[in-house]
Length: 139
Image (cartoon, rainbow, N blue to C red):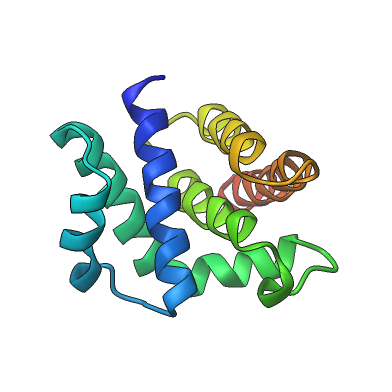
């Protein structure tokens, strides 16, 4: 498994933990989380950037998810799916160094590993809609 995949998986676990505790700021939870999930410094730095970025942009991201995840209320969405979507939406919209197809493919693979049997299709559909809409808006 590549370092970026590992970082995304660890970031998902951190986001999941924050979501379960209703925490908005990852800072007070970072030391404890990283002590329980040790990874190499590069992997931790990338994962931490994903977590901080997703949390910082969460109000905007959640607004997009509510718009593009038709017939799904964010609070009723599976916690894993919701956090994969938040992390991937952050990368799609605020991390231009990562190709959009790579972001979506990584999110799908992580959903297959951590989500339900329906998660990967659901996540693919929502992220594809976000990407198409953002491209149309910026064109």
